[in-house]
Length: 335
Image (tube, rainbow, N blue to C red; front, side):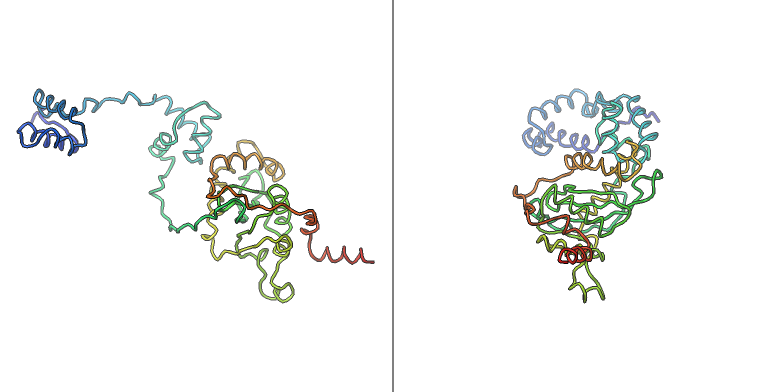
C-alpha cells in the first residue's frame, strides 16, 4: 500500500473541511461558516479558494513537520539544563530561571525552562503531586492588622552547620515577610529579641497569630500562678497587642506557605553566598526580606497601616525581660 496516498489532518482541519465543503455545495453561506469556525468572512473566502484549487491538502498547515521559527537554539537548551543539573539541581523552574539570568546571562522564560526540566525529569509538575487542599482563610484588610508568627526547624545551612530554627513573622494582609531570625531553637528569650526588633522597625501590630505552643499559651498548672499568661503573652499585654492561638497548622496558612518558600529559596541563597552560621545569616536577612517582598508581597485591600507607634513610656528593654528578673530589679530599687 502506498502510504503517500494518505493525508494526515488534525481534528480542527477535518472540521474546516466539512464546513467549507458545505459552503462549496451551497448548503451554507460564507457568513454562517465564518460564525461556526470563529473566522472572518475574508478568511473563509480564502480557504474556499484553496479547497477548490488543491482539495483537502490545501487545508493542511504548511508548518506541519517543520521547525518553528521561534524555536530556541539547541545549544541554549543544553547549556541551561547543564547548569541546572550541575548547580541548581534542587531549584524550581522560577528560581532557576532567575539565577540563570542573574549569574550566567542565560535568558530563558520560566515556562520554557519548566518544560525543559520536565522533559529532562528534573522537575515534577504540580498536577502530578498529591495533597489535601484546604480553603484559605480570607486575608485581613490592612498591613499590621494581624501578624502570623512561627518557628521553622530545618537544615538551613545544609551540611555546613548544625540544624537550627528560623523565627518567621508574616503579615496576613500582604504576605510580606516582616521579620526573620535564625536561632538555636524556639524559646521565649528568642521571641523576645525578635519581637523587640520587629517593634523597633515597624511599630505595634494589632494582633499576633501563633500556634498553641507553651511559649504563647499557658497550660495545666501554669494557669493558676500566671492567670493564663505566659511570659511572652504578658509582654504583649503590656503593649496592648492581642495574641490569637490557631487550632491547626492550616489555620495559619500564610506563614506555613512562607516556610515552604523559605526552605526552597533561602537555603539556596545561603548556599550561593557561602553563609554557614547564624550570625552571618541574620546579617543577610534584611537584604533577603527586601528581595522576597518585592517578588511575593500582595497589595492590601486598604492602604491604612494598622501599626501603632511605641510610646515613650513603653520601655521595650524592660518589657521584654523575664518577669522574675524584673521583680528582683524592682525590689533592689525600693531598698
